[in-house]
Length: 330
Image 1 (tube, rainbow, N blue to C red):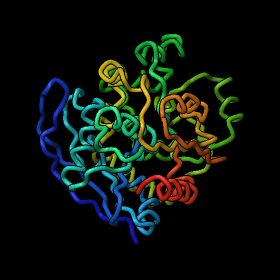
Image 2: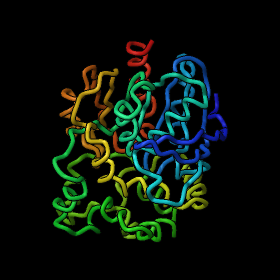
Image 3: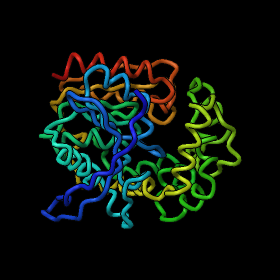
């Protein structure tokens, strides 16, 4: 089967903490198949399209596969307020999408920022979760202080040296990335390289912000996907800009404050952690605390794989997912 065209769904009003509600938004959703529902949550800067390689194998294996462009991305709505992008909104959208599709529970699979979203689902919407899969992104133990404080300690207060801190000031990152979306994907959508090569670069220049000086960045690894596939990302982000996705990053501290149970108490649902050996941002060792947080956990590492796992090593990821789903999900 080919990657299904997107359909647009309008979500019902979103119920938020303290009893408040907000109007629902429109989500652009790729969907195919029948059977237990699998909802894929993409990261930054990606789209529901990032899961294109997962559709045919999982549909053939007997699953209903769902991959939205999440709020702020692609053909989905991108509300103006920064406050509309905290974890309560992001998880609320996925729960509301199940309502619209008349699905009681789903397995949630998330990569990169989407991984943080799916690991929050058992805490915020436990009755909608049949299982959780983190692709590169682990469920981490709650930090003892707001996350941005820890990040500033890492880079000695030089916010420009860490992309998450650089993203905090509205308009700064958008001005750089929106100016040349094609360059973002040319420089960053690449295969993993041995960590020794990454360490050598960091030793010469300890800079954890590849976005700030893309024109000067010497790329590592080989380009991922075809020219047409990379052009799809460029075309979409040329229309939308990067603001919606960047707004997700502006809530690390708020999410930490408003969901204190996340990473502080264990979850019971079947859980799978898929690590990538050569991901320089989400290192496999970051998942070391997960056995204390997931009562039913399996962990697998894909060797010689970088950050963009579902696009770099789709066949291996699909085999891992289908094997786990068949054993854990009725």
